[in-house]
Every structure is written in structure tokens, then in C-alpha cells.
Length: 308
Length: 307
Image 1 (cartoon, each protein chain N blue to C red):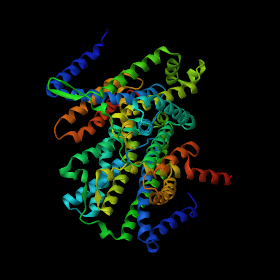
Image 2: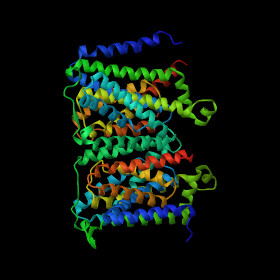
Image 3: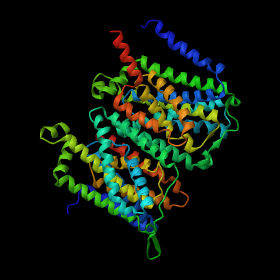
Image 4: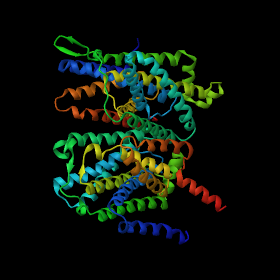
């Protein structure tokens, strides 16, 4: 067991995050919400990455969740909570079923197929106009909580904590050893009696569930969905860069990366309207070449050096 | 000519499909073949670099886009015809490819494959974003009169300019096949792809082979980009779908097969053109590609072939 002191810092951080709306105005709260959204996506991406599978389908499941929530609200008039939970459930169900197909693929084939799945979702929603609103999208009559900034903040904060919790659970449980073993050497993992497919399926479903949930919450708090915005490639790109910069294969890494890049990109967006994502591309390249373990990896290395 | 027995039902099926399409809408076949030519001429350079020496390059379509912008600007500023700009552009692309390899990809050759995948993804983003930053996301097109040439057979008239893609694809395809089996460098490339350590032991300069093949693939896709620009409007994201489509075609053709690319492109090009030919369904044509790809990859995975 760890010393109790090790829990104090994270708990204080969680508490401080919850108190922020008391001190911050509406604009910083909106920035914080967007950071939380990407942070949760980055964590969910990393959860699957720990098994060695790179998904390029974050935007796909995010968009799927967005549309599930908004279609249920607009067409069936369900309560916002039900809509958001259904978004998570539907994304998880789709991932579970597709998992039987795509989880047999490895490395680049897996990545490209997840990217293609996202495109398929987008084309279906784009063309099924009578149900999904087509290219013009759908608009909610009213956003959740009447658009009250602090409530929306707590909502997205709660979702973030859920993602963090799921990731920590993955890290502390037997899953961690199974996924790491699969990543390091699949044949060795299989001979040690690990059910590779079952573990991958759990990881893929769980990470898609979070992505769908985040999408559902996002659409309920912004009030509209269009194929081009809900399936925006940035929902794949930004979380990926954030997790890489912060440090992959950990919960802390994506958190650190999302905080840094989220705040930086907010400022860059104001200064450079087109092409501010250039920074993301360069960060991905530089991190892979010079710092493959990310910032958290460096911190861990320093710490273990100091402890002898 | 020997025909593989297993291929006979496929040939019959293919011929039946062609006859059916001809009876329904002959233009579908023509546009399908033209589309296939474009797909193949983008995918063949990727087949060389991914299929032969196993370098994953997710910036493939973006390299084509950069080349298209380069051609556009040369043509705009000094009034050179894009076809004449092709050679200087190829030279610049070659230098660019050389530096991309030496500065980045070289350092990931020994790392896990995931690093290469993410690295080239980063290169792709850097390229689209840099182009957006310099040229804004606005769509650009060069007014060229010769691209709208058309021909009429019987009652159907159709554009003929796009057949250049078919010519380019065939040239590239046969050229690369000849290169791989008849030149020293080509044979070395095949050996490096099969086993880099073994190739080094028998005295092949492995790194030189990687550099050469990567640079050649950048030059080839760059030349396709120059031609692409004469016909299509260009914008910073124009290349991105081609990365995915080329990758899918390589996967479908089977790693290392150049002629497979031509057949796969034909199948997909004609299938897309057929969906486009159905009134009111053209929006769905984007899905055909991904569905066929997923089916093919899945079938291969189930058959237990290593992907």
C-alpha cells in the first residue's frame, strides 16, 4: 500500500477543481470546460493505447455520442440526463459490436480502420437527412441547465472525474498487467493465459463509452450538432497530441498535456485564426523524436533518480 | 499467357459487371476508370514505400497537397504551364522527401511501429496547418482550358482529360515493377523489406535503400500532385482523404503487390462512380470505399493472414 500522503495531493486537486467556478468568470469557465472535454478524450484514448492499439476514431465515437444525445432530445424529447447516458451507452454498444471485427486487426490496420469507421458514421449522419438533420444538423430548443455557466462547468468536471476514475481503475486493477503484457508481447501474453481479445474488447468499449459520453455532454451544453463539427478531426488530433506531450500510458500524462496545450491553444486561436494547430503537429513530431515518454515520463525519471 | 484457375470465376464476374454497367450507363464505366486512375496514381507510390520497405507514411496525401500548392504557385507567379512545372517541382519534392526522411523518419526505424505512425501523422498535420497559415483555407483553382476536353461516342459525351491519371498509373505501375526486378537498387529494396538485418549482412547499404525508396515515393506522389492540381480545386485538406484511401488500397491489394493496386482501384473507382450514377444517392458514394475496405481487411484477418 502507498502512504496516505500520496492521496492528499490528488484529493486536494480534485477539490480545488470543483471550487474554481466560485473564483472564475464565465470566459475562463468556458475555457476550462473545453480543456476538460479534451482531457477526458485524451485519457480515454490513452486507456486503449496501453494495450498497444492506436485509435484514430476518437472523433467518430465523440460524434456518435453527440448525435445520439441530440437526436433523442429533439426527436423523442427525453430528459437531458437520459440523453447523455444513452449517448455513452450507444457508443459503447457500437464499439462492443464493431470490436469483434476491428480488434482482430493490429497496428496500422487497426488505426486506419478506426479512422474509416468515424468517416462511415459521418457519411451516414450526413445523408440520413430526415432523421439526423443532414448537413445543416440539429439544434436543441434549450441547452441543459438553461446555459448556466457554473452548472455546465460542474457537469463537464464530473464527466472528467468519471474518465479519470475509469483510467485509475484500469491502472490499479489486473487489467493494467494484462494490457501492458499485450502491448509488450502478444505471444508471451497469450502463453501466460491472458485472454487478449476479451481484454482489448473491454478497453475498446470503455474508451468509446467515455468518448460517447463526452460527446453527449458537449452537445447538450452547446445545443447544436452538425456532421462537420461533431466529427471534426480535431477531436482526434488534439487529445492525441495532449496525451503524447503529457506522457502516454498513464493517467497523469494526458492531464498535464491537456492543461498545457488546452490553455496554449486558446490563446493561439485568438491570435492566429487559421493554422494555429501547426503547433500541435510540431509538438507531435518533436515529442516522438526527443521525448517519447512525455513530460510525466521525465518527472517520473527525475523522481526515481532522486529516490536512489 | 497462363491464367490462374482460381481467377477464372472472378474474371467472369468482372466481365459480367462491366457488361451490365455498359448496358445501364456507359459513362459510369468511363468515369469509374478515370477515378480508378487517380486513386492508383496516388496509391502506387505508397505501395512502394509501405509495401516494399515497410515505412508507414500517414503524410502521403498531404505531400501530394504540398506539391499541388507548389505547382499552383509556380504556375501563377511565372505563368509556367503546370505540366512544364512538373520537373522543377519534382526536384523540390525530392529534396523535401530526403530531408523529411533524414530529420524524422530515420530516427523511428528501430522504434516501435506506433512511433512511426504517430510521427508521420504529426508531419501530416504540420503540412496542412502550415499551408492553411500561409495560403488560408480558401479553395484555389487554375483556369486551364485543356482540362475540359471532351469526346463523344454515339450519344454519350464525356471528359477525356482524366484519362491522364490512367496513363500515369500504368506508367508508374509498370515502371516500379521493372525497377524492382531489374535494377540493383530495386532488388536491394525488396531484400531490405524482407529482412533488413539479412540485407545488411549480404552487404546492402540498408539506410541508403530506405532513403532512396522514400525519396522516390515522395517525388512520384509529388508529380501526381502537380497533375492533380490541373484538374481539381485545391485547399489545405484536399490531400487528407487520399492518405486514407491509398492506405486502404495498399491493404486491399495485399502488401507488396503493385498490380493489386490497379485492380483494387478499378473496383473501388467503378463502384463509387456507379453510386454516383444513381440519382439522389451520390452523397453515399463516400461510404462505399470504407465499407469495401473494412470488408476486405476483415476477411483477410479472419482467414488468418498476417496483416
